[in-house]
Amino acid sequence: MEGEKCTILVIDDEQSIRRILEKELVTAEREVLTAADGKTALSILKSHWVDVIIMDLRLPDVENLELLIEVKESVAYVEVIMITGHGDVDSAVEAMKYGAYDFIQKPFNLERLELVIEKAHQRVLMARENSILRHKRDNNKQQVQFIGKSEAIQGIKFLINKVAPATIPVLITGDSGAGKDVVARMIHQRSSCSGRELIIKNCASLQKELARSELFGHAKGSFTGATDSREGLMSYAHESTLFLDEIGELSLEVQASLLRVLESQSYRRVGEKQERKAKVRLLFATNRNLAEEVEAGRFNEAFFHRINAFNIEIPPLKDRKEDLPLLVDYFLMRLSPDNSTYKIVDRAMNCILRYTWPGNIRELRNVIERSIILAENNIITERCLPRELVSAAEESHAALSLELVEKKHILKMLQFFDGNRQKTAEILGISRKTLYRKLAQYSL
Image 1: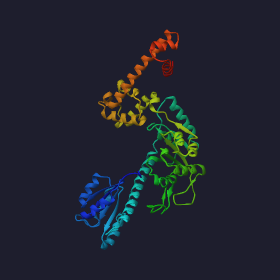
Image 2 (image 1 turned 90 degrees about the vertical axis):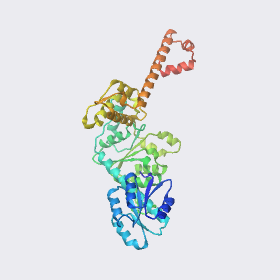
Image 3 (image 1 turned 90 degrees about the horizontal axis):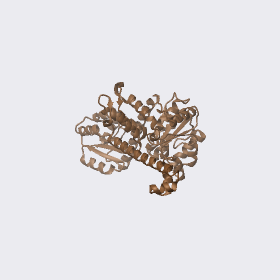
Image 4 (image 1 turned 120 degrees about the horizontal axis):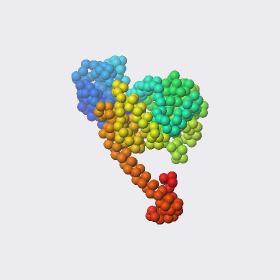
């Protein structure tokens, strides 16, 4: 969220002001839209996501603060900076009572304006993040389960039940979409702090410069834009669980700070010397090979060994295809509208079983949701599946068929020559080295 591009809307009836601001404010991280009046501005706001509005206090087609009031009432997560003349300071102060973030007097200083824009944008991002956090907290109350009967899944469930009552950190590894978040939720729901909210953060969304502030909070004035003190995720997760997904995306500096939390159960907000107690259960997840990241110098070795003390590895869906029928039934039941019953024909199910699922469970869920929409009379056929999935499944089936023919032929020649590998290789027209590789491949 913090790395989003900032979109600015400049509303001023003077064309020269619009041109200057558009020219000076546009950067790789900022987009600038312009409007000459309130009507045009409202039209833009209906079709664009705007973060910061720079608005002239006096516009030709609206009364005083009318546009400001309408914007604040109808547009979520936007901050408004007023542009005023020397005689309009009192009106600008009045505008702040109605929700304006700040005001800039004409002729304005561009450096000051950019600073105010940056602060306003950070405020918008924080408001959006808090909203998402509240939404996630509400969703945490839903019970989750790991669907599957394979030996691998049974092993994962065993580990979850064993580690949940403990307080040690857990590292959850596996490919994207394999279900790492489900494991984290199950651990939290079976822990002693299950009555509290699970706090979730994807570290890939953290802006490098603000990651420590986001995690630990900051004191007022500790950096540019820190206009007031803020609590971090560590504070929100007090006496609960903090799940940090994509932990490999964090900088070495932040990794060191988290290691300190694990070792001393305390942390400091950015800009403060005072230690704060951290009564937090930490769960981590990644799709990277952290051992290789340590070897490459991109991951803190001590931190890795600390969080890897208890590792739960989730295998990709292609390695536990016996779970596919259960997962398909689960998603058909969960995603069907109005609790309707959907059936999937054998040929469609065979395509699902032959496909390799590079996107894992997340991809399967999306495919089933699409199939339900396309189903006729609640029957899911091959036509309801994505074309690329059916084609890939057919190619996989053809490749498996060719391998089976080759395996049977090699076995037949070995039996014919009473296990003599030299003669078998010669009659097959391949080297002994290639034959040995084929024997290992087919477990012969």
